[in-house]
Length: 253
Length: 246
Image 1: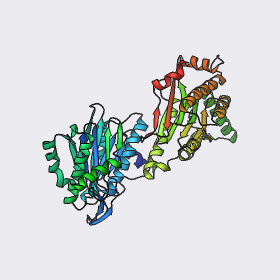
Image 2: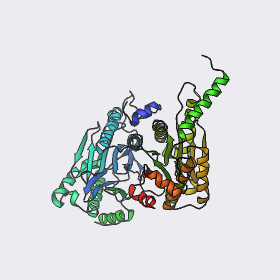
Image 3: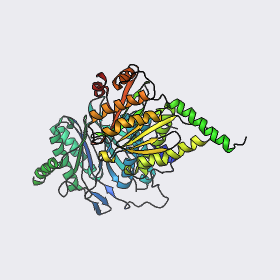
Image 4: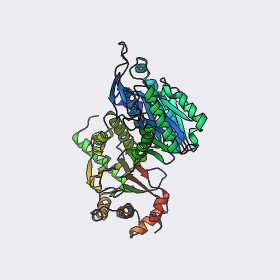
């Protein structure tokens, strides 16, 4: 028995997580809705996350209003790409898991603990990911109080965790723009020294490029992307007006 | 060994006496609605906390055995989080936590002749969108519970509870600000302490001052307009200081 373990609590209450388990029937990759491109980059105050608003189901655009950046708790952001159903259930699980730990054990879970919890969730979702129906990739952004800096972690589908110095991206559109991050870092300098304004316009442009190379990515033309930051003061939404003015400049060019 | 109805009644009475004896000297708990949220206040002798976060808008404080407070707290936290995940955080209410998860379990444990009763009297508070929607549930060791608005009190004796409620009821006609509420809560606490006969001082400030020689104020706020996910927080020593020096 591990104290403060939310998965065990759910078992005690007869609740299953993940609620969808892999079935022995042949896989079908067209089942379910998928979120596409999410980006995390550092800036001088912390970490910025941006994502387009598109969710697709096969060739169909399912929603242009999807939210793919979510709060895990008051100092941790998670951005998700891949199976929407699996990712959302995982995030809901993680949110409750962290709150449950803090409240039942009367102490906060460490950043390391939170990151392992994300790995565990991914490994639980692995059977359905292997079937091609429930795979998703998270990027976790946190403000590390001990080091006084923002940190970015990304995962593979089995739950292996990697830390990134400057940026992280996931989703179908992200694969196509990987090289562009490197280009920006080498020509314009590292993201972690940029002001928020610059980091925002670089990442929105990256989203727009991703949209032009990937049909599943919504980009910034049709609907305003979502942007959140995590800093020493907590988590904040980037206001719509700010995004709109950057959108205007970029789309005109 | 067979139990006759007489034995059973006798057992319950003895158990009740046993619990009441142990609760009598317990430090009272005050809950108060204010503009900024819901305030829970007590004074504790030991280092152990008496006020706890249960769920997004729920808090709990109690008097009695620390281990029994812990039992109640764990049941409430477990139930709230399993429900909040299975349905939604909006489906976790004080009524379900106290009325459904805790009260029947406490009742059963209390009326089982072979079990030691829990020595606990708890106050649950639920933060609403406005002070009128705040709720307080008083939960007794025998599983009985009662609902109150605006303010709630848990104390070692009936007399202390009534005296404390008299202090608070007149005051809560209009919604107070946090600092005024905190001061009133400390007054109510001291009145309850005096009523329970645990002190020789008569003025409430003197009662409080006497208690603070060996004890410390513990106060928590469920913040109404917090932008944080978790709106529960313990007030810091810094925030409490101005109320302790006078």
